Image 1: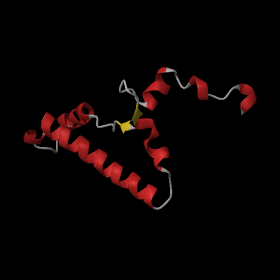
Image 2: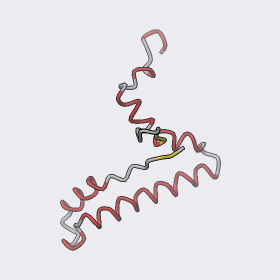
Image 3: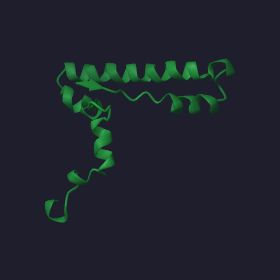
Amino acid sequence: MTFRLPANVEGVAAILSRSKGIPKSLRTTAQAYRVAWRIVLHWLDAQLAMIQVGLVKLEQVFLPYAQDAAGVTVYERLKERKFSEYLLTEGEK
């Protein structure tokens, strides 16, 4: 099973470009790439610690990022179906 973690380089680049306290030399795509993946690394470290101490199971954390042979994640599949299979109906509340 493969996973695709969410490193949004474009989103980080947009934040860096708007940040006045950051030198222009650090408002580059290369820097955005490094920052985005550093954020993912910190998130991953936290998730793995939670798994290690038994707060969550691996599947709970990573299942949304599991991808099929076409590269579509479980989350993307559910989103395209508008989560309709999982919405409660009036009688199920």
